[in-house]
Length: 143
Image (cartoon, rainbow, N blue to C red; front, side, top):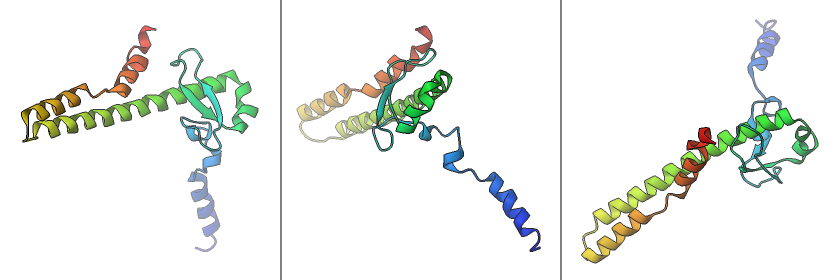
C-alpha cells in the first residue's frame, strides 16, 4: 500500500485545479469593479458583444493579453456574461425591495393619506437595473 501512495497522490493532484493555471477563470482576466490588481479601466468594444460595458484589467493583462484581439474578444464575452448576471441579480434585488415597500404600504393601519403616500412611493420606486438590463440585453439581437 505504501508503494502505491505516490501514484495515488499523483492521480489526485492531476484532478486538482490551481487558480493561477485555469485559463477559463474569468476572475484572472478582469473585474467589474476597480480593485487591486484590476486597476486599468476598459470598455467592451468588439463585434458581437454589448458595447461600452466598463471593466478593469490588471497590469499583466495590459502587458500580455491586450495585444491579442482574439483573446480580448473572448474576455469581453466573459465581461458581457458577468455584467448580464450582475444586472439580473441587481434587478431581482430591486424588485424584492419594491415588493417589500408595497407590502409595508398595504399593511399600514394608520392615516389613509400616509398609506396612499407609501403606496405611491412603492409604485414609483425606480427599477433602474431592470431597465438597464432590458436596454442592453433584451434588445441585443435587434442591434
